[in-house]
Length: 151
Image (cartoon, rainbow, N blue to C red):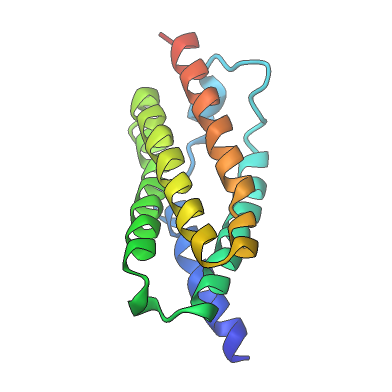
């Protein structure tokens, strides 16, 4: 029971952005979208899976080391978390595609830092982050394509 509670405490903040900034799917659907743009209903499903994988990775790291001993890891993770949570605000609330793209690039870069920090601690835990990195890369490509298609 204690492990489940710890995992849920790690997982919960990742869903915060979805609660704070409702995704304006009307805005997304009103844009000129490339042929490879996923339908809006897929985003919550994909992000739920990614957040669970991220939380598993974090949980595994914190099972090995205490939170207070991982200063560099915690800084990378916090920076990535903040950037990740800002995307819906920039893209959907402000309806600013370019800021969304800039945030996507920053999120991708920090996700790579988190990945390498995690890999130094636990290689198995780092593998849970690979789908997140691939999705961030895809999101960057999607955002910049949407930006140019809607100039």
